[in-house]
Length: 358
Image (tube, rainbow, N blue to C red):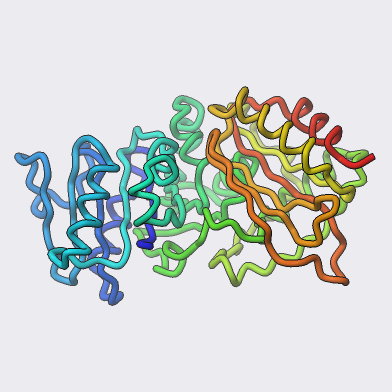
């Protein structure tokens, strides 16, 4: 399976700078870069020739640059066929979306198209956020909120153009939209390759990374009566997550309030779920609210199952699997995070409560 990274972010957020760095660095990997459409931000006008519909260029360090218009699935199948035939050699793919693109349909390609799903593994969605203009862009463009909501990792660029307080307020805002994504400040595309690749954002595994500051704040703000436990075993080593957020979130009441359409919430319970009730309820939620659910993931404590059940999804496409056994020292509990557009938090929370074993 060839791993794929989706690189997204609004116009001018620094995607091209980061891509150039990836393409020019001597990292020993052969990377195929797909530009999903011509826009204002081509990787390099000298490299990419705009006259042709499809252009594949071999880079000096062995990387490939492929510019497509049209069907992404067809382009991926074409690249896979060439790779198998030995006419093009690459180890992984980076897809750069246009600044105005919603990454959702790009991500769905890897689950809906069987040929693509057989050859490629979606590794992560990385979103670049321009610190200087992010607040106004998030206020004005829902697509920018979607780019944040879908992300497995957020790179904040141009932080040198804002004050420390403004940067802190932006991190806080992003955290509320997506507490799953590690936030990293990067300058001029200087992100470490290890922070870009092999993040395993779409792997079904027992790790559910939620920013502990978000959970602490959540506990402070809401006295939930669900018997919810708050243990955080944040071993980030397996996911490549660097949670060096520098968040000091004990005193954020002075921040300007932004009523973002895209928000997140976490559900936790110490009681086991009834598997049949939960399956029926989640099926109904996906049918009704699937388009508004961007990303969701959970580690579940199920009645009659001695292993953790993990699930995650994008829009209506949900996958689940059995993970490792509950260890004797572990406190069994369920933890789920939902990220979406104007989701009915109370309805979902109450519905999940009703699925617990009484």
